[in-house]
Each structure stands twice: as C-alpha cells, then as structure tokens.
Amino acid sequence: MIGFPGTIVACACIALASGAITPSASLINKYTFHLSLDDNENYWLFWSIDDGAGDISFAVQANTAGWVGFGLSPNGRMPNSDIVTGWVNDNGDAFLQDRFSTGKFLPSDAESQDVELVAASETNQVTTLEFKRKVKACDAKDRSIDVGTSRVIWSYNPNDPQNDSPSALQQHTVMGWRSVNLLYGAPVPKVPLPDDVEEFDVRLSNVRVPTSATTYWCSNFTLPVIPGGANIVGFAPIVTPGNEGIVHHIVVFQCFNKTGFDFGYNGACNGNKPDEVSNCLGTAPVAAWAIGGTEVRFPADVGYPFSGDTTLHSVAIEMHYDNPQGKQNVIDSSGIKLYYTKTKRKNEATIIQFGHINSLSLLLPKGQKNVVTKNLCPAECTQKGFPDDGINVVGVTLHAHTAATAMKLGHIRNGKQLPYLDRNDHYDFNYQNAYYLPQPIKLLPGDILETVCNYSTEGRTKVTIGGLGTQDEMCLAFVMVYPAPKFSICLSQIPGAVTKAFVDEAFAKGWATPYNGDDQYQLLQGLNNMDLSNPPAAGDAYYAFWNTTKRTAFCRDSQKRIIAGGDYTMPSYVPLVPGPPPVCSTSAPTGPTSAGYNEVFSAFSLLTSVIVLVS
Image 1 (tube, rainbow, N blue to C red):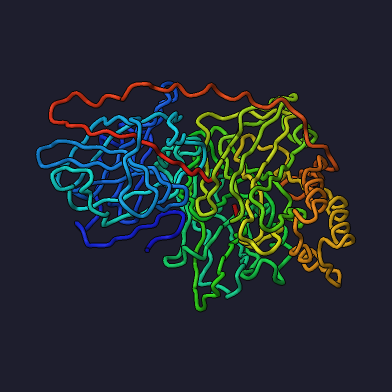
Image 2: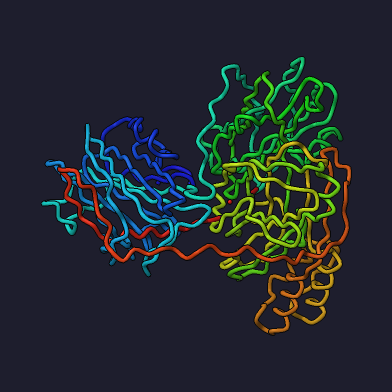
C-alpha cells in the first residue's frame, strides 16, 4: 500500500502505462466536480447532481484499455461495497455491470437495474464510462447517497473479460480508495486566483519533530507591509514530503498589534514562550487546515483583510504533530501558503469557532456504539454580537478526532430548526475539508447555533476525554462569515458542577476506582473500569449527566474579551420536516440509443459510507 490512509490509497500490483493521463476537457466542462482518485492521476472521477430529477451522474476515466471498476464502501475495502464494472471491447461495444461485493472476490451481480449507461469510449488506451443513478435508493440492497464523506473505491485491469463474459472478469491489477464528499459537502469548483495575486508562506523551518505521540508547535511571523491594506483570498497547505502522516493540522491565528513585529519564538506551544505569543493563540483563525484537506479559495467577493489600517500585521502558527509511533529524526518545514491581493474584495470576512470547550467534561466511556454531545452558542451571544441586519455564512469546516462518526452545525430561529449550515453523517477523521455554501446563509441576532457530534468508543479500553491529543476528542466548527461580528469564539460545555457530581457519585457507589491525588486526568482514569450496564444504575447516572439540558457557554472577541456568558438551557425547537420519500422506478432504465453500444445492465447499488468531517 502507498499513499496516506483516508485520503488516497493505491495498490499498483503491476506496471501499466507510465505517466498520468490528462482529464478530458469535455468532461471537465460537462460535470460540476472532478478529481483524481490516485496520486499518479491514472484514474479520474467526474460527477454532477441534478437536484430537480434527484439524479447523480458519474464519469470515470482510467489509464487502461481493459475493464474499469468504481463503487462506494463502508470503510475503503471490498466487503459490503456496491460496485459497477464496465469496459469497451475492440468492436466499440460498451458493457456495464452492477455488482454487490460480500468479500474479497468477484462481486456478484446485483438484483435490480437502477443504473443507466450514458456513454462509453476507449481512446489511446484510456477507457471512459459515463452513467447515472438516483441519489435516493429504493432497492433493498441499494443505499442512498447521503450528505458527508463517502469512501470511493476504484480499480482497473489491462484486459477486457474473455469473450466479454462478466464471469470471466479477471482480478484488478490496480486498486485504491479515497474519501470524497459527493453531495452536501462536495468540493466547490475552484475560484480562479486574481491576476494580481501574491503569495506569503507561513511555515516552520527545519523543526525536529519530538518523538512524543502529540506535540503542538508554535512560531510567529510578520506579514507583508502593504500601504492601504490587502485581502487574503485563499490558502493552501504546505506539507514537507514524507511527513503527510505526522502533520495533522495547522492553524494560523491573528496577533493583534498596530504594526508587524517578530516575537522570536519557535518551540512547543506549551513551552516558556512570550506572553505576546500566548495572546495570539486561540484568537481569530486566519487559516485552518487539517489532514485530508486541500487548497482553499474564497468566494470571488470575499476576502480576509490584513495590513494597512487593520489589526492584522502578525500571525502565529500552531502545528499539531501526530507521532504515535515515536519516529525519530523527522525534520519538518510545513505550514500554510497565503494567497493575497491588493485589490479589496466587496465583503471582508472572518472565521468564528463554535462547539465544545476543550475540557474534561467531554467524557466518553469505553465500549459505546453511539454517544452524542450537543453544544450551544446561545441567543444572548448572537443578540449582543451580531449587527442588526445579521451576518452571512459562506463556508464551514467541521473538526473532531478519531472517535467521531458524525457532525453537524444546526441553526435555530424563533423556536424552529432551520436547515443545517453543514452536516456530515459519516465523518472521516482523515478527510477534513472546507465546505463552501452555494449561496450565503443569513444569521440574525437572537439565532442559536448548535454543534452536534456523534462518537463511537467501541474497541477502546479507556475513557476518552476532551483534549489536544488525537486519541482525545473535540467537537468544533470553523465558520467563515461576513461582516465580522463582535465575537470570534462561541463555545460551551456541561457545567463543571454537573460533571463533578457524576464523578463523585461513580466513585462513592463503587462504579469506578478512585485515584489518589488532585490530578483531574488521573481522577477520570478511575472511570476506565466503569461498566454502564452493570449495575444499570451506573448507566442511568451517566446518561442523566450526559443528557443534561444545562450548558455553560461564553462568547469572546478576537482579543479574548468576553461578550456574554453564563449557564444556559439547551433550546427546545420544532425540528426540520423530513423531505419526501424517493420516487422509485418500476421499470429498468434504458441505455443510449446510439449505434455501436451493447449495454449489459445489472443493479447499480452504491453503498455509501458518508463519514460526516477535526484536530
């Protein structure tokens, strides 16, 4: 296996045609989205969504004259995956088959016919297949394509099946998988960078990565001095080659000063650093990237202001190194490339952080299939912090760690739930990408924001708590908005008194083993032996603690001044009304009528695993 798990994984079992293929210009123009599924650009995926018809159309283009496979999987592997295979023979006849895989062997044909072959070709040893299906499935073995992250699997072989027999399909010679958002969180087409764009790299220099499992490394930088100011219009990750598995996330924070200056610090974030650096961390993020993310370009009318008469002249970088294997002698110079222009954009944006306070009250017992936390940004914060005509949301990045399975950012107004600002029903820790809304969504004073995270701790032998490490947990949403409100952070947690009461009860009744001393982390480790099913009262106490409607919440500005805060009750509201059920076709779809095609159909059942997108 080569590549980085969760983003692109490929197995090249034999050498095929060398060199990448250039994606078809006609397919790029025809489809809304496209990306290469492998590092070598030998397999391209294109897709578009027809919301009116409820269809999703795909095209795949592979560097082979043989058969091509495509599908979606619950975990990036073949078992329990829905797969389509197809090829074009020497006579120009096209074949398409829908299969369902129950193991690592030739997938069987599916039972119904829910896919339509639209076009197929083979030119210069490159095979292209185009097909479509309904987004919402009806067949028992079909799965609807949901919002969030899907695990796409792909494969190909240099040969067509002998005599065009589906049962003669030889095993793939090249295969892989990649996480990608197909629907709600699909990557937006890139906005072209302006002609006058300039670049500035905020990156570390030859850091020897510590061998500890989790390290947060900080440094600071002075931004370019531009009379009249400029706008940041996008950014891109810079990851030192070979360090893709260690560089977990990068955040660039704003430092507040009237002129740029260098604090001269380059070391651990929890080290003996100047107060000026400490005051930068946890302020308004200028750029944030996490594992699996890609280059970000802001909408064409949105920019992040700096230099000139703004307060942004210096920044601090926070780098999270994830080194669970304790690798030695790793040298890193990763960072963020900022794209900026001296031409001001119409709307000047900022980033707000919503979610759970990074604290021990994010307490997840071991061995649980699904634990849900709800976090509040109360109406008092938006009432005091938003301008009278509100603010506009243009993009969201959801962030959690390895126990998270789903995330969403809810929006409540006047006792009614409005459509989610972002939602990922199948969160993938290794694929954390920004989602930019097709159109801005208005937030008004008095609105409530609710950040919801689902976790699974099955297989874990210890309690999981909120913290900075990859095996700790978070529940955060970074939201790009304009104009800038008065606060840059709005976070909450279960009140400390409620957490303490639960822990004290668990120790007093013998459900957990107390630790000596005052260290909170040691104290909570005493919960590791707690069985939520034996006695039942232990589970009842935990869920009463976890489902409490009380939250301690606060919002503060980018200079860490509190705007509002206190204890609040989680809101009651009228939930969203579910959409209509899918319209199911009772007849087999028809293929293209053009001469030269011989369609072979089976059910196209795509099993999606949307792992809805942290530190």
